[in-house]
Image (cartoon, rainbow over all chains, first blue to last red; front, side):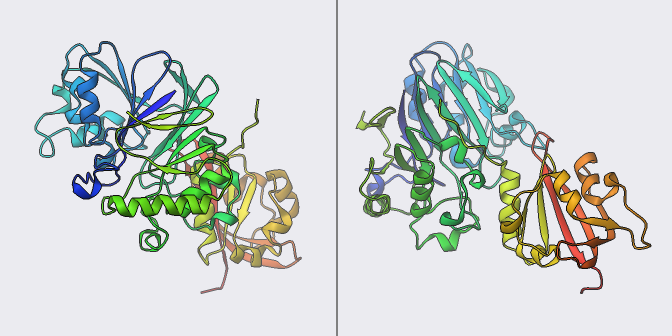
Length: 288
Length: 135
């Protein structure tokens, strides 16, 4: 299994000279599975370029949304397969106690926020609330569970041939509790991440920034490292970079993560747009 | 095959963190009625700490607390606010006399609120205690 990072910026797209190395597009990754249709996770602005690549393919595409905040949805209207009449597009996302997934997505894909109604989209769309328990996408077994973030939000655990990729881009697992006091069974997202070969996890803030953002649904770098350590993941990749953080600041965030992680095991890295993560024993990150 | 950790549901996790950070006496039960947490203000009313007691199944905690109405009449097991919230998934409130684990008899106003998950399944119950006569 591999994951291609098409966007790893959080909150707001942040293109520019200061963000060129880590990238400015918002959340989107593409899973490379041994078998089955393409699986895309989140529809931030990174999905636009991916859509151009997938446009020449045929067959169904699965899009798994963690939640419907704009930085995870805003690229959907610019995803070329959405505008292909013969395309079958399955959209998975968290259930809400009030409206269905289609109705909630239609709030964005409709005037005045968007020029075209969702009902006018030519692709054949099917909306799925993520089920309790596991489901299959191609050769992967998938599990989605609610995680601590504002509004209905899930994280995903993809398992294929004994390797596990966990993706929790927006997550505040230590809201109101210190990491050293939290028992695993009582940590949001723990079961999704436990023993993963690769964990892509929110690390939006430096430790000194976090106190001003408690309850916003994101992690400090220290919280991300604690979560990865407690869940015994093989490799931690930090995700959802703050739009105000420059490449140099993100270099410092990565260095801080490696310092907190310590000497043993595989040191954490920051996700970079345009790179491919090989999920397995070594969980390599390579430029694609 | 590696056995994975049995994780609590997100509403239960968030309820416990909430209870840990307020001065209102609160207890948290899971969907099966097991008493999985009570906060420090509740410890003062219950007479023991959660660390001392650990988790208590519904059968266990029912056996440890005696409950009666203000006139001294007994309360049927299924009529306490907690039981109503668990069995019927609706909030319930009543003022009752409890004999606590330290032997103290306390008159408590009790409000039990079911927590329903997004699919409307019961995730657990939050129980608020207030000592009658307190401001």
